[in-house]
Image (tube, rainbow, N blue to C red; front, top):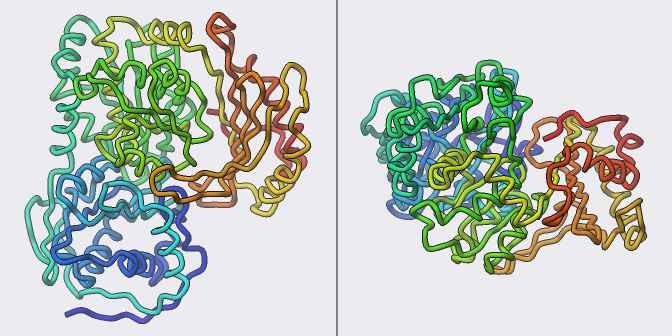
Length: 542
């Protein structure tokens, strides 16, 4: 029996870059989660026979919300729900399941790289039928619906057994609990040369992976240790935990200190890697050399033809606006399309669906291809293993060859977290007003080529997106970018991106801090970060 529950709107249910993210205690309010889920189904009602993919990263509150979502989905007319065993589904695996099963969409319960636990973060993201995040037109419609919602629907039914494979029912909706790993692992095996990677391992190639007690642990154990034959223990922190073991599941040198120490030490393996809470981000470290995500995108694009699925070449590359222009140099050399989009994987979807690009990436450690419609951490790691196996060189040798051919982008992101929203907005407004006067101005060796708020018009569907940040390019190809993040759960996060280009034959082996120091000084001078925020240094540098 379908039951109608009266409700009232909540303020602030506006999805950010990757869905709605708030503290767990916010989602635990009566009607809060139900309102948002019902708003999704009101905006995107299921058609006849529609299927819904449901899962998450295993963080605290995941199981509770899955049960709520299944009852609401059944009441709204879904015919079938596909759920990962234990409530587990990585974000790229969920995207693959949506596409493979022709599902109407999917619900992914995750706050990605944000901390987990009763006092930490939770999130809900809706993916559409192509497997990708809902586009802005859908998320805006969902938000408008949350402002007027007056009821949500449910079916009174007991919780389903999430840990047992098999089918059951909630009302008229069939619920199938599936192995969350198998379909995704088979997809990876179809894309990469697993035999070559095994031969590389047998010849002495070594590897370490940190799953950060997050969702990729089960996937990594199956793919790296079982299918590829790396020794038990290759996968570290491989058990998903509701609080990620008290850690911060963000794959960077700060939050993966043991892996970083290993890779910088005398006994470092050939490749170190990590992934985040929901499995869509990655960290790549060679022996003694971290590879920043912008460079990783460029190096993957330049070497993608070494993997079987991309042997015929790639159609084009897309990157988010704050990502360094390293990939642009590769696209130019290969003679393929290069697209710059706003931050958020949703903006890559139309380009991928239209066949304009094959490889996409973001500076925030997300890389992927047209095999799904999400960034994919394990895909990036497997691509690096495939490249190492095919080229027979170290990560450092591959990187230096790449810089010698394409030039090098020295790059860093400075995050100022949990700022008062008013202060962050005032900084951006003042900087935008100053943009016309910056053009042509010189700061030491750097001359501003232009300064303006970033706006994007999708070349496929014509949709427009504004308010994405402010870009200050220099005549030598370097850039400084300012943007307010859409992935935080508390206050505002200001991000300043520093991107300095050195052409082939230039200073390609200098220290990153040394090369970016002048751009950091320019960023402070033009934006007045300390004056607006009271912060003398960023909270995090990546």
